[in-house]
Length: 374
Ligand code: KG4
Ligand code: ZN
Image 1 (cartoon, protein in one colour):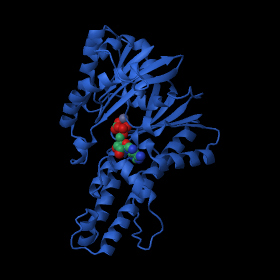
Image 2: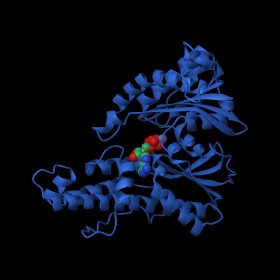
Image 3: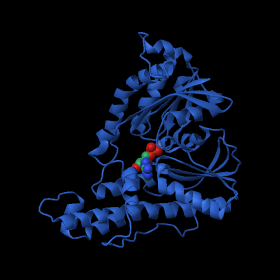
Image 4: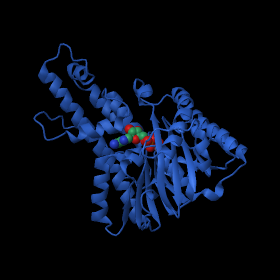
């Protein structure tokens, strides 16, 4: 079965074509049109701009996806209309939520039009479940249930108890900012580029025991609470207060207005940023690891599953692995390849395959739901 999958839930326009057979998957094309340049100057996603970009990008990347599917080696495409090749598609999958409502609707309406033209059914997909099921992509994981899933992205931070594919219970979630949202906001405070996660990760790895040490200590919000909820807005605020407590010269240099500053003042501010990135990342990892391990033990799970953009973080992946090996060595640990942690159409195709029985031709049933729960 060949699935054409669409995701426009946030700021990436994604289309993938995935061939699925006996729960194994072959990626025929995976196109992601990033909107980073558009949102960069705002330090976060602007929904109206994202919507406009999705509308512009979808027809372009659909064509690209179909061309790649026909010519996986990238040979020149000769047919006058790549849409003729859309006949290989059996099913259309689209993210219906959760996400930014105006953005979701662009994908949903595009999928409906395509389904009408090609006379195909649609499978509506939950974006959070797709982040979890991205783990089923490369190999058929011999997952044993129950499992604990931690989904950490720009829009969500949820701990989910999974009893089977399609059977989920949210144990806890963030009460304010999502983990990725916090990293994006911290990056903005420090004058770094959007999205914050990758750059914070890069700068954190440059942090070593240095001559200049700010000895920054940030809070680990809710780490000792018994529930499985999270809160990251306080972490961001602590970064802001610490930044504001620096001398005007340091602040100026951090934000890269370096004229009139000495080289050592500029150097000092670089070290401040590296230390702050290291401590922010570590504070977040400490909370995520502690609560996930606690849930895993409490529910005696057999598998721990990670997903979402923040799960692309190298240090987080490493520290989770070490902690699981040490504390619950019999548990399996599943985490997608970093490129399938951040938003992509492939994971939507995988989720649609497992929900293929829900495919419908009643297109008026397919609606965007910004606050859809897993
Ligand atoms: O899953 P995703 O692509 O989109 C949503 O569904 O929100 O996640 C995007 C988030 C952003 O906040 C971004 O800063 C974060 O994932 N992110 C990372 C890394 N790569 C992306 N955070 C930490 N380390 C990374 N390497
Ligand atoms: Zn996502």
